[in-house]
Length: 261
Image 1 (cartoon, rainbow, N blue to C red):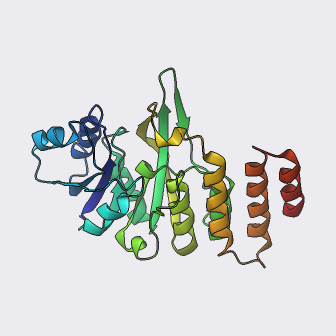
Image 2: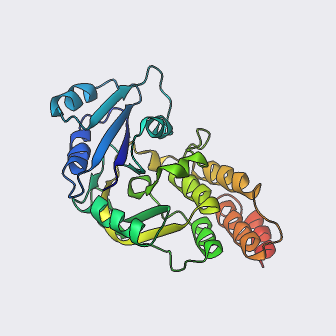
C-alpha cells in the first residue's frame, strides 16, 4: 500500500479546518500523512490543529503571507508516492482516497481528479466529469474549453511535480493551470463520482472578481507552448480566447471565434 501525502493550505479557517482534517483522517484508505501549510493565520487555527493530536499531521506556519500557491511548499515536504490536496473549508467523502487510489493504479494514470458537489447557502450542485477519451489531445482541448478540475479532487503521482507546479502569478484558477500543465506531460484521467463536498465561503478565492484577467494570463501562458501546426489545439485556443473576451467585448470575441474556424 502506497503512502499518500495530503496537502492542506490554510489561512484563517478556524471555523472549518477541523471538519476538513477529520474528513481526511477518517478515510477508509489509511496510509496517509497530512501536511498543513498555514499562510500566517491570525485566528485560532494553530490551537485547533494541535488539539487533534494525530501523529500523521505535520503543521507548519509560514512567516510571510504567500498567497494561494503555498501548496508547493507542502509538496516539497511530502514523503508519499502520491499527492492529494484538501481545502481547509471542504469535506472529503470517507471513501475518496480508496476509490481514487484503486482507479489511478488500475488505469495506470499519473494525474486524476473526481467529481464534486458545490454547496452554497441555498443549494447543492453536482459538477460532473468531462473526460470522455484517452486521446491526450482531446483531453487537453476539453481542459482548455473549461475548468472542471478542482484542487481538492486531485490525486497524482509525486513525480508529476518534477515538471509541474502551482504558479504564484496565477491569481485565480490555480487548479485549472495545474491541470493544463499536467496534461502536457502525463496521462490524465478522472473518476466519475462526486467524492468531495466543496463549500463556497463569502471570501472564497473562487469568488474573486478578477476572472477575466486570470483567464487571460493562463491562456497567454499556455499559448506559448502550443504547437501552432496542431489545428485542433489552435482552434480550441481561439475559442477559449473568444469566450473570455466576450466578458468585456463582443467585437474582440468575434474576431477570436472567426480565427477558431
